[in-house]
Length: 296
Image 1 (cartoon, rainbow, N blue to C red):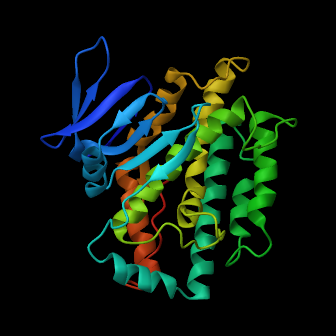
Image 2 (cartoon, helix red, strand yellow):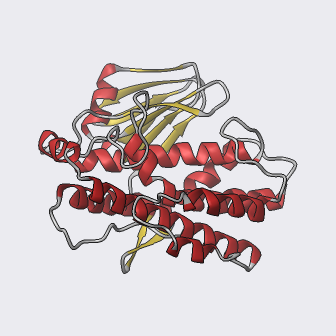
C-alpha cells in the first residue's frame, strides 16, 4: 500500500479514536484518516493541537511528523526511536561500517545524482550538457568533488547563469527547499524502518545534524524535485510562491513511478527498497548486491 502524505494547514484539533486520526475544525464536519495509511503528517499552522495518544500511534506506525515554521517551511521532523525489531543490532553494525564500504556507497550516490541531473537537463533543454560524462569520473568517495563540479554546470543550464542555489533564498529556492525538506522526511522514514539510524551518515557528518544519513541518501532524489520546480518556473517565473497548489504539486512526486532496478514503483514504495539495499551493503548481508537507487 502507498502511504499517504497528509498536510494540515488550518487551525485544527487532532486526536486518536479507534486507530484513526480525527481532525476537527471549526465550521466543518470532523474527518478521519486511518493511522496505518499515513506515511507523513505535515502540520503547518500554529493553532493546531494534538493529543499524546495520536503522536504515540503515529510513531508506532512509523509515521514521520513534520512541523512547519511561520514561513510554511519544514523546520522539524519527529521520528520513532525504534522503527525495526532489530534496531540495536543494525545500529551496532552501522557504527562499524568500513571506510571502503562508506566510500563505495557515496560514489554510487553521487553517480546516480549526476545521472539524474543529466536526465533533467535532457528533458528540459534537450541536451544533458555532458553531465553523463561527469558521472563516470566519480571515484570511490568522490575525492575530486565531481559532485560540485557537475552541480555548477547543472544549475546554470537549468535556471540560467544568474541563478544561485541558496537554502535561504526566495523564488525558485523556496520551492526547492520545501520539496527537498519533504523528500528528506520521506527518506528518514524509510531509513528508520530498516533499523538504520538516520544520524550516522556516509558522507555528511555534523554533530548537530540528526539526519546525516538521510541527507546522504536524498542526494540522487533531488533532481525529481528540480524538474517539478522547473515546470512551475517556466509557467509563471514571477509568481513562485509556496501556495497550497504548489505544495500539492510537489507532494505528487511521492505517488509517481520511479525506476528501481528493473521495476517501476511509486516513490514512497521505492524509498523502502532503496533504504533496504543500503542497509544490506552497510551490514554486509550481501556483499555482491548493488545499492538500488530510484531514478526518474
